[in-house]
Image (cartoon, rainbow, N blue to C red):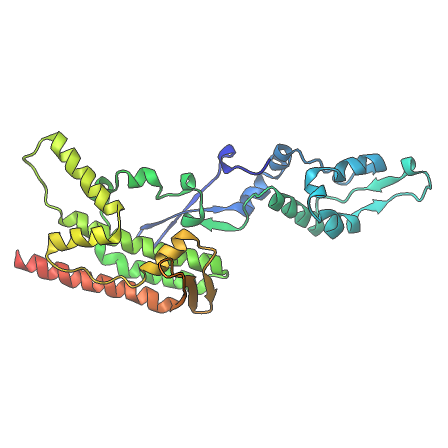
Length: 308
């Protein structure tokens, strides 16, 4: 039996920026492993007689568990850390001292066991998490149009949010975190774009509730649909072609398989899903493009509102 997060009460944290915009949830799996160690071992049926003296037959019973048979844990860790308490030639009288739990070895042993049962490790961010652990899951998307009405983004604080993400990327110690933060920036930019569209949709006061629901559902489909559909809606509302979004191929690649992309210092290499070819982008340039996108949107909005 492998680990299933749905069988556990998983504690999620929520990552926010200085402007209180929510990037999404995260889970510190190492903390979960540590806090739920005994229950996880019990769930997997693992018996580890820490710091006990056991007979050879009992030791054979321990190492006959699936996790030890199907991995190299015994050779890599266990053999070097057990102690034989006597040198009796009679096998049934051999006593083995099992190691203590309070050691670096035992930490590695537990980690390898949890790896075998596919308990996640490290920290996972929004787009790496199972859907039911995400902050921006489908329950939000199903009412996306109404949510943007009820909880509009603060347009003017967007540049600072991207600066915060840039700083987090620079300080991140691992490449997976950097990729997750880049993907988070795309999500925030997409939310900004949708928020502008929703804000410009005129209110229809003289239609029935039934007709309003049909209209809302259609707008919601456009918001959740392709970028081409959102661009058409933007143009129909503001009578202007929206600014280009040159990062979409990278965004789609990361959303499809975040592990595939490779970060090398200030660059990220990814597979373009349309062409199947490898491409490379400079991370700082990606973030600058998004701020430029914001600036161009602001110019379009200002010009549109000045005409009214």
